[in-house]
Image (tube, rainbow, N blue to C red; front, side, top):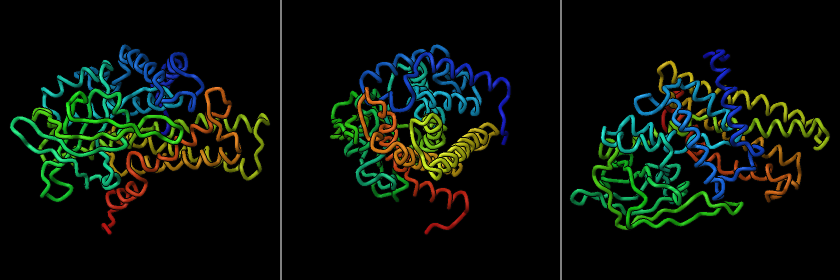
Length: 382
C-alpha cells in the first residue's frame, strides 16, 4: 500500500476542498442537520452542482455517466467532503447504483443509472426488520409470486430517508422453505406503490431520519427483480460491502479533533494532563482509521475485493468516533448537552448523539468482528 499521494491526487484534493468550503460549509459537523427540510433542499441543489462537475458519480464507469476515477481518488473525494459535512453521495450513488451495475440487467441499468447520475431520484434501503437487524438473513418480509407480479407483505425498520425516497432497494423472502441465507431476493421497489405505509421514527434530538415501512399486499412487477431469484443474500452482501468501506466514517472526527485541540490550546477549554494525552492518542487513532479506509480503496484499485478489510475499517471508525465523542463530552462538560442552532455547544451535542448508533447502523461491531474472525482469520464458526 502506498502511504503518499501523487501530485495529481494532491491537486484534486485541493480542488474538492475549495469547492466544498465555498459551496457548502457552515461550520462542520453539528451545524448541518440531515433531518431538516432546509438541509434536504440544500443537499438536492448541492448534488446537482456535483452532477454538473461529474463528481456525483466520480468513480462510476464512463459508459454509465461517471468519470472512471480510481478508488483512491474516490476516497480522497469522500474524505474531503465528509470533513466539511457536505452531502457528497447519496444511497443511490454509493450502494444502489454499483449493485445494479454488478447484477442488474441492461434494461434496469438504462432505466435507473442515468437518474442516479443526475441526482433526480432518491433511494432508500429496505433491509432491516424488527426481528432481523444484525441477523439480517432472518428477515420475514414475504414476496409471493402472483402472475406478472410479486406481492409484498411485511415490515421494514430503521429505513433512512424512506419518507423522501422515490425508490427502495428491497430485500424480501421469496422461498420461505429454504435455509435462511437462501430463498431471499432483491427488488427495485417504487415508493409510489399502493399498499405501503411509512411511519417516522424520531431520534434522541427529535429529528426524523429513520422510518418504519409497512407493506400490505403491495405489488411489484417481476421485471423489478434485481439479480437471480432466491440469491438475493449474495447481492445484499455486496451492497453492504459498499456501505462499510467508506472513509466518511472516520473523516468527521478530524473536524472535532481540530476544534477540541484549538480550544484547549487557546484556554477556552480546560483539560487535565491525562485528558490532553487522550486527545493526542485520538489523533493517532484518527490516522490509523484513515489508513484502514485508504487500505480498502487501495485493494480495490489493485483489482482485489475487500471484504473483512471493509469490516475492520467500519468497526474501527465507528468505535473511534464514539470514543472521541465521550472524550469531548468529558472535557467540554455539561455544555456538551446543549441544543439549538444558536448554541455555541450544539456541534458537540450533535456529534455526541450522532455517534451513539454507529456501532449498530450498517452492521453491528459484533457482526464485523465475526466477519474478520471467519473470513479474515479463518476461525471456525462458533
